[in-house]
Structures are given as structure tokens and as C-alpha cells.
Length: 138
Image 1 (cartoon, one colour):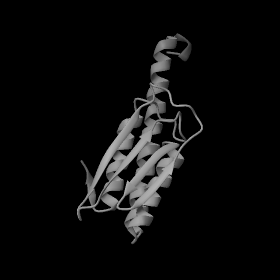
Image 2: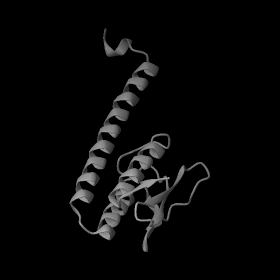
Image 3: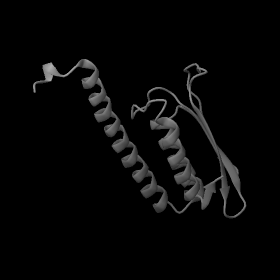
């Protein structure tokens, strides 16, 4: 069977699958890198900065991370659209400290995530961030 006999719609589905798999692989590599970096950093504030910078550079130009007196915030110049997904996570530390991670989807990001893929990735990154300060997402 030649590619000319494959209907355009089927080719489109196959292409989206391949691209989605590549995006997922890049997300997993990025999350693994974040885990490695925060596990090697002894200072809590630096672990938060590492998480914040990774999220800001690759996943959301509009992000705010606050935890136990550390406040990190970035905003983009892009206008927010009502359809843009927004994630808000509460971080609860084991020592009673608390904070939050808020982010808005900014298209497409360096990893090219779709609006449907982005919230799941943000949950993964929020959990890594919470673990880096000895906490959890509540």
C-alpha cells in the first residue's frame, strides 16, 4: 500500500499520534530533569526557583509560585483568552507551611503542548514542586 492510497484524514490522525508521542516524551524528559535538579539542591528556596523557572520557560509564561514566604511570579504580554486553561494548585508542606502554584496556558510553549494536554502536565509538575519542599498537592 502506498501513502497516496491512504486518505488524508487517516494520515492526519497518524501524524497527530506521532507528534503527541514526541510531546509526551519531551515532557517526561523535562519532568525527570526537574526531579534530578531539585533532589540535588539542599536549599528549599532554590528548589522552588528551579521548579518555577522550568515551568516559566517551557510551560507557562503566566505563572505564580508562592510557598512559605517565597513569591515567584511571571506574566506574559499575551492577552488572556477565556478558553485558555488555568491551573491552580494548593501546596501543603509537611511542616505546616503552605502555598500555591497558579499557571495559565500560553500557546504553544516550547514543548508544543495542546490545551488538552497542558493541565495533566501541570499537575505532574505541581506534584514534583510539592515533593521538592516535602509536601503534597491538596
